[in-house]
Length: 447
Image (cartoon, rainbow, N blue to C red; front, top):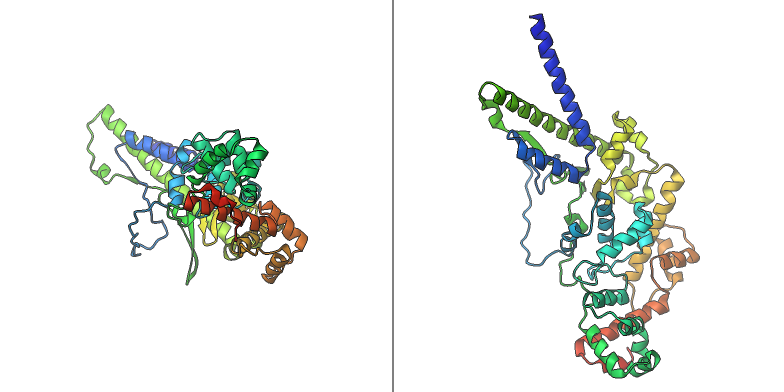
């Protein structure tokens, strides 16, 4: 009797050790590794069932209605671009950088903020950001992720095999072409008018708004790991099942009657493994929920008011709050994305060590957003001066000088009023060429 008890205890110890080993192994996996591991295990283990799901969450009430999604024949710009990531993106970190760029494109498909701004806001490596942007600019339709009209046209010329020295000079001098005419530019470039007219006709066939043929939906339609929502009851959040699959042991396992001998032992091992994987995935999911809840509890002001209200928070703080190791918190937050009402953020970006480190770059982030939105909505024929922008920013409750506004505007890649007005006139001139199909229309002065 005593020996039987020892044998049972030994078996239980082995089961527990196996479960804990699986839990540690799965906790260290990123999302892609977990999906690959589950796919391989599913092929080898008949007792395992995995539901990846495409919507829903672990916190949604069971009786909640599932909203219908209207059918649409047009493709989302975000989904079209994200669907091409697999051929240019090779790691979770690169995916996060690419998604940060994707969040900053406008309906035309242009990138609306400088690389430096994205790197600083999300704390990415600047050199890697430059590298990723170069790859993103190879996606189709050609011209997406351009930062201005000239870059958009250059990207399309390269894609069509039309980019040479003459085309490069023509695109670089389009603003002068609108003001001075084709003959003056031909003399300056020491080429004939006919050659320039041919190249201009090629430009006319290009699309200055490559994203316009797609639907422009919100970035939240691309799955984040966690979705935060504002309801009448306050803030609620949910884990996406596509990021955190549900793992079950097949109900048929209870009725399995294996033959005696080696087959019986093998099936028992498979059943034990299925239960260990199920337990490990659930432990990963519950730990993730605990980390997210602890972060949201400490960063409630950020969730309500944005980066300007970010509070000091270290990973060691969260580890202490939920009684896990700091390494566990680090593994959980690495690459984990949250869809907030204000936009998509990485959970890791909410950690900072001091008030000054938290507040200064994030206050700058807020001001940059305000300046970008003000200039985007200005009257293109009468752009806002830096003094006017300063007054509007101050009216929002932020103290800032005109000199700082000028510096921030330049960091966004936006020129002074005269330059922006000239850019608008250039766009109008190119539009006339596209509509009429006659390069000589560029001789007209824009009104």
